[in-house]
Amino acid sequence: MKNVTSIFLNGEFLQAREAAISPFDRGFLFGDGVYEVIPVYGGRIFRLAGHLQRLEASLASIRLANPFDRSRWAAMLDRLADSAGEGTLYLQVTRGVAPRDHRFPDVEPTVFAYMQAADPEPGMQTASAITLPDWRWTRCDIKAVSLLANVLARDEAARQGGNEAIFVRDGLVTEGAASNIFLVDGGQVITSRQDQRILAGITRELLLELLRGEGIAVSERDIRAGELATAEEVWMTSSTKGVIPVVGIDGRPVAGGEPGPLFARAAGFYAEFVARFRAGEVE
Ligand code: PDD
Image (tube, rainbow, N blue to C red; front, side):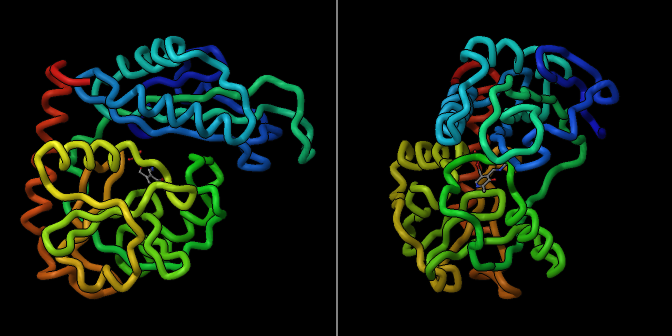
């Protein structure tokens, strides 16, 4: 397990090779669980409160009691984060281990988390995307581990030489297979409205906050798929990649095929916020 520096599984801190889960775990049999992916910068867990709040919402939506309170989550994740200092935390809660039956069992949930140290190689700088029909269910606000549609979409994007798939439902852009989508039109930044069709991205929310703070006009509204073709800029956001410009969609360049001027500003605001977070100046 490349770069995995520490694991937490059901109360124990382990090395990757020591961790094992029953094949009867409902996460394995049904995809019956939820997860979070959280960056760690300079030993500090980024936007932890927002991630734990979204976890609580996901758990409540699938009627699974939260196994830990916030301070226990924070203590456990801090200990994992300390094992590398720089990288990504993954956490997952499933409904537990029981003989296969669709009905909920009366068992303890499985709690799994790990820290993955950052790769020394610089990450993705620009992305190219394809559009695909959004064939997922209608509760994409739940951060569920059942990601079959998302991984199929990413594979389709990769087969076509791209990095991301942008989902379109009923003629409207929802989100990426593992990202939220922004576009710039007439100098205004636009992103899809927050509802059950998309994940409430932590990076999306932070970027909107930073842009508004800088006096840049932002709008959360429906985006017609056709707007992708005429947009001045398209960006994608996620915890693992931050803000990335999408420079090509469906084989055509976005605007000039280069990152746009508003992207440069937005990425600057984001990088500055991360730098201040590292320095302990912001939460
Ligand atoms: N995915 N939409 C989807 C479908 C996602 O899977 C993600 C993130 C996002 C962006 O959310 P955030 O800014 O909170 O990371 C939007 C993570 C990184 C993943 O599955 O690896």
